[in-house]
Image (tube, rainbow, N blue to C red; front, side, top):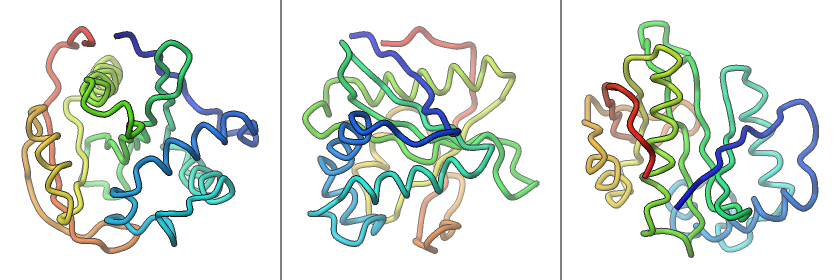
Length: 177
């Protein structure tokens, strides 16, 4: 398996074919969106909603949206945050890692996490953090399997949802899967 990780440009609208792919990827994760409340109706996620959500993310210059393709097909998206708003938090964050539902359990999530970790390590960062919604035990199991440890609990900054905060120290970059 080989993934290409490409940043989504923040300086212009998302091309219609790409927005269609992104909408399909987001819509395929109905169960996650039902837990997160990120979209008003997880059974009816629309292109304009995905475009607005990504535009909101990209309005922050510390955010990067990375698109994961395998054999030309969009299989995942990762949203990272270079600097947390809390100045006492020195680590970059993974804000979202989403794999197309029909591509889950094939190793893409692990490979995406490894690619992001390697990017941060290569940039001189010592660790990475993320938050997992308390109502999402599958995500918690995924991240802890990858070596992330729960370091606290708090509400997220956007919607005040209860979350576990996880952190993973970064060692020498590993080869992706």
